[in-house]
Image (cartoon, rainbow, N blue to C red; front, top):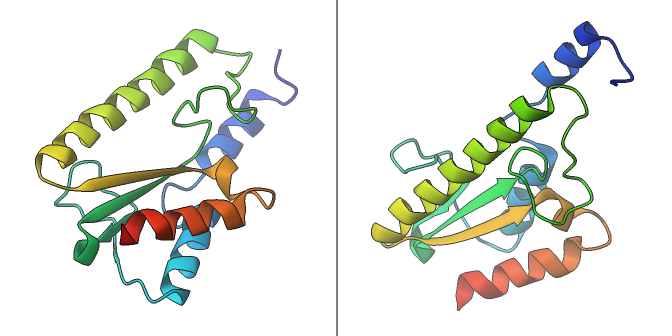
Length: 137
């Protein structure tokens, strides 16, 4: 049973942004401060990656743990209401992610995916340093 009314839940879910999220901005500010330049949301690429670094032939996706079904993550919990609908929705998101990754790889792009839980204060520095390491390799 949901703790809030249908109307409140609907309003809350509708307010979740798809672009310019806090985790994305964290990654963008960090990369920019390290001298990396990027394009945002390139519509010409499959999946419209959050960041595109043409110089490094790399795309970066910053995924929300819930929306992309981050396996074994404490922040990925299927809601108790409309459970089947949410399972189907999240599985479809994961399937689309996989399809887009395959297309991008065929086009020669390197793909980096960062889940929002890895940008929480406890892991943020390690995650961002690892990101730089992967870019310059």
